[in-house]
Length: 334
Image (cartoon, rainbow, N blue to C red):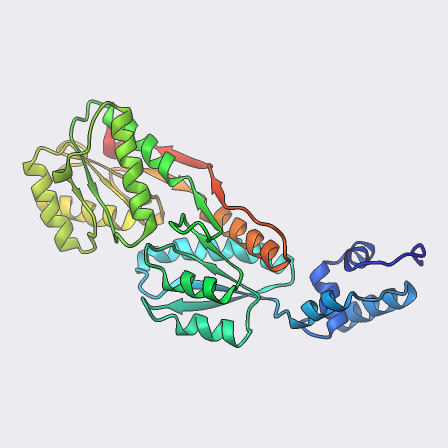
């Protein structure tokens, strides 16, 4: 059935045939994965309805790769893997529904060669960075190239479009709860200070203490902790200083702390309460169960994919903070 005597668009074709705009673009351009039956259906429809592609839009369509590059930091610990996996599964739900594919690439500190090759060889339409850094060579490179990208995590650079969980409020809320449970001395173990999330969680910790009428004791705060040996040393220092509860910024540090407590004969929660600002399967079988914060990694992956697709389509995209989190109080702080 022919349409009215007017110029039709890719949107019109997609709606009429009940397929995505990306599929229509691929069928018209002859590039990308489209079944022969679908391609013939599109071409027959646009012929019947006198479709004439806008020259600029057609040029853009033909230059599309229908790939999104997802950047993983090569220094990730095996304990970080579930987070990245759940994020990518969330991303894939969105990209696959839009006939897009995901390319995984790695950055290694200052070495962003793998990412640069993808961009310079035009192998992707956009990029998702899975971590934000204070000094961020990948983000700086993408900005310099004017290449569309979205970062998971808050950034100190206002030019960067980000999507993040509300880590500040979540950390503030958990800290305030613990500080008002007759816990006078709260200690903190944190990770890499070049990670923006480390500073966000620290600010939430500080705000939570203030909310409970307490202040940060700098002797009970350490960042850049990344080995079990260092965790063991700090456990002994904190116990000597009378710490009643240690909050770990992530599940990896918390897992280390649990093992150190077991080795040192420190009873949880009898001698020391512990909690984590991030929950994962790593802590699922802990005894006692660990008080923690739970975020939906699948959802943040979905949002990041939705945002980068809008960017690559030329739409305006704003930063987003996801307020959905859960404070889970368990036996480790009772």
